[in-house]
Image (cartoon, helix red, strand yellow):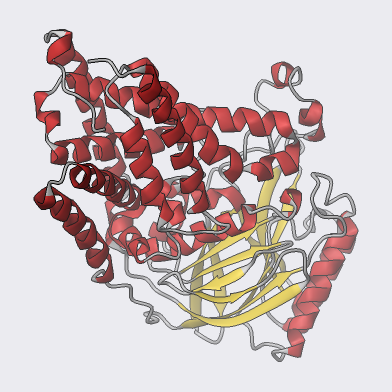
Length: 522
């Protein structure tokens, strides 16, 4: 039977509340346990009406989740791009809602709560995978997994990466909703069963081993957060020479903590210098001079301008007295921020596109930077990713699988002001450390920067818009976690099963009278 109008609108209220509660699970404030609660409300809101109505329910949930989460996009490029990105991300939750209706309507088996749990989880993870890949390379921000950096559930990253952790969070949400429904109907056995299953997932996360022991020696690392003159705008790097000078001064300040030659490598952030030292003699002189003072190679974030046009966002390993000995160029520039697709069309909606005067080009090589360590008597391989690349499973995984013994996340958060963007990114870096069992350094121009242990624990951390430095001895590791070894197979398996569930449901529904289709979960 169709739902009365009052019940229909109540589902939209549940969806809006669920989206907002889920947003609170992400930094800041980062209340991780709220993520399953938000999913539980979405599950309850997706009543058995129609694919169109459930799409609306999903859209409402997505708007109240993603809109507040990515307000930093408004800070950086204005309200129109922020709103467009919010609607785009919410549309994937709308698609999920419709797919959930299509899957359920054709299967009598979906009357079982356990089968509903499986279908819901598979469809949710598949929707996350889709929006992480399309369009323009996707935007993985806000995946459920990224809300769990401070939760014991984060250990599931080690076992199966982002798809598994998102699946666990979604499953907990369904179990909480099923427990609430059973309790309302005074079904004690089902209530206890659902809560016991949820508790088992939490206990299972505590049993996952997260090793932090050095397997191949340690690396003495210095990291420099130089700060910028004017935070919060796309032109925060207008005073390029000042930014370079800030990072030179910060590198020199490391000598207040260590002596020359005591560091194995010094890390600068993305855009530590927007003056390319490979072509500018003054920038080269400054960088080489301070590198010789600390007597250590430096990984410098800079920009390259090829003669053919465009630009590369590049990390250059600078050897004292030698110059550049290795480079890595960002593989996944951010669309509509670092390059502008369909520029002439997009200009009609926002003239902010003209702030990007030269489109960024994608690098083609994995993020591998070899660093010679005389102290260790060998070459240490750094796995390097730049800024938003930390959100993309394949890019980080490739850097580790290709030999990265320590992960470096170079980033520039200056354009996002005092928003939560930097702490949301830090949560991703922490979860990547767990996923691949690697010590990780997130180094930003303005913060938040951090040294992270292989189990995701923050060893040191800086604050926003301060000049600061960090020094730490970090373990080097070479073993591959189950998540790293599995590669893309968990995601591909989920995608195939999700498509099968939806198609089977649509075919089944076509063969059954409407009044015989199963009722919804609420």
